[in-house]
Image 1 (cartoon, rainbow, N blue to C red):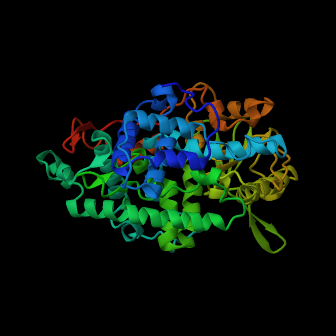
Image 2: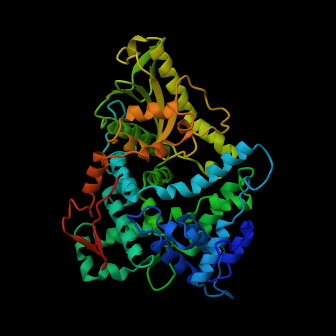
Image 3: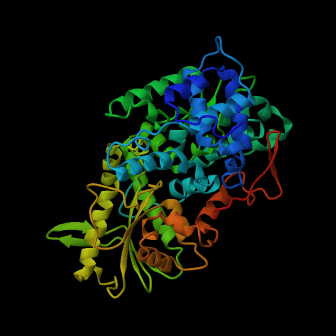
Length: 520
């Protein structure tokens, strides 16, 4: 089949009708099998080896979404592998709302397009092991600062929220993912009744495992469609967000419930098993906690995230890391940036925000730009204030040297991929020093550089007119990094790690080695 089967742009309606030609009961298993085949762990972007590079996980996830939302079993044809490839070809030719027209400023149109494509694609590039380890590192192994007394994230919060400990929750996530990857997306209760599975119940009892899957991962077609209607209702409140060509960038209910009942003889079908891991990511837990425990959960997550980034910064062997400095303005106490990192050749002002791109950002809307400015603009202002205090020689900042360059960095929980690019960003404060927006993952890599220092990399990047507009990750990709001991320690504490179970295999009844994680 030609990769250019559609030598034109395709509307969302035409694409959806192409999906609807087939019974979901025949199409979804094909989607799941393809997601397994072209989503094997340990390979970087395995879909690049798929036919015509069409089998992207984001396309497969949307095909499953459309089939579950709009599909029917009545008077529809069986789907074949050839049909799935044709649907994928249609998806790859979907028309973009702003890029494929001549209206408006080109730089704005490109910005909005990149906001959409980065929101659609970049989340699939995060290493699963790193993400799962980060969850435990933040929510389980990081302590609150002395001046913060938790009201929500108190001992036992994870059992109240999840029905089990956070460690067990992550263990259940790994079991469901492993079973789905082994069996073409299916999760059959027979796996748990096999003799080889007995060792699992020594760690997580059967009742807890099944209850956790049912409570957090499983859904059926009716509930899925209700969630899709909720998404449409919410999106309709934002002007312009309901355009058909933006539908695929809105929230996919499979993100919240990646396992579906009612397809085949297995209990569950995971159309895209990679989504199972994301249920245990810090971002997913953030929203799960907010939905059940309210804004107090997200506020206290912010306190933990600040401390977690401090733990990462202290891995720098050639820097002194200072906590936020309290100073007085009149009779009022004020605080500096969260961390000040002092190198021999650089002072780095670090402001931490437990934020991530909103749906409007992923839709590439002007509202999304405004929301991004609100989320990171305050961090820019805090960096500006701290910079001014240091430059003016405020006595409370006497420990911060003034004889070397100063840079700022805003650390976010999830990436804002084009935040550093020179696109129009009305309302974002200007700064007197170079400021970079970086994600937690980028910081985890930055502090473990082996072929250069973090300060040398940041100084060289800022001095380069082109590289200074790139994501930090794009520059880090050219360098070598060591394993991150904070993440290693968490991973080794999980149920199925090699450290805890040397020479032991998890069997469901598959033989899946307790794979050692790579955090590079």
